[in-house]
Image (tube, rainbow, N blue to C red):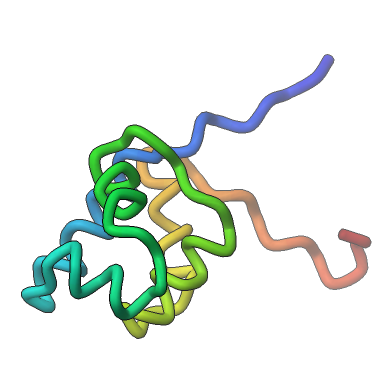
Length: 91
């Protein structure tokens, strides 16, 4: 029997992006300038029309001066994140 993980909470991820951007008082243009990403890409991510790549989220995290794991932790909102592997258990 295969046990699938719960769906990632993409809404929580994009809401965290919106919160952090708003907290800094940045427009989409400002975030685009700081990330090197297109303004349209940022809008589509924040509005849930696209997810973005790992490279995209890495650029966003650096621009916002937060660890990328701070953003990605939001993917587990509403369910338990995976447990840390035991020290003697291979990953």
